[in-house]
Length: 259
Image (cartoon, rainbow, N blue to C red; front, side, top):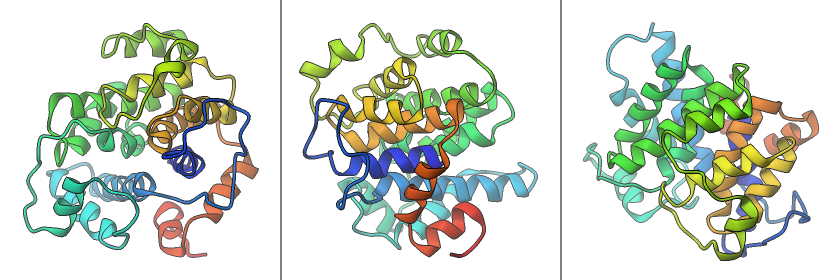
């Protein structure tokens, strides 16, 4: 989850001021966590509760409760319009979204799963409480499965092959970057995040590559960072810097400790 949080915070500065290169300041005065971090932690909190209960019963209501409870504490962190209404409203039903919100929040599904198949199923459930469009579900499944594989000894060739069952991945970053524009759909941002991870040489390099694509920088970096964190690990100085941007409540949900 810290990989997603880091990508979100680093990319937050460049979301509406894209930078099409990798030699940018990794941290800046404007760096902040956004909805990507809040919902990543909400899904993590829900999955921890579900797992502590023996993985029994229906996960959907736990996700809905946690996402609304935690989301309402951070009303101004960049949610999309329909998601704001969902968090604030009494209607718990999904709204057929294919936005990348389903994929940016899903890393805990990959981190806590016991198999690729379970990662995909947890990813699917975490998406469909809001993003029940097939593309919204596919994006979450892809990132969840990639996170699991990255953390369980699969090499990049194996991860690429698995992801090609979901997306074409037929363009390199150098081919994507010049023409890429802001796109908040799963189909228009998840493949780019996957490619950033697959072309990377380390965690920081992955986040830099993801941001350099442009577009929805914080979310692309959150998705790529979640996979890279599982694959490479996260340097302690980067982890500490990312955590320093969170408040006590979010830290307590991530670590079980107050700060």
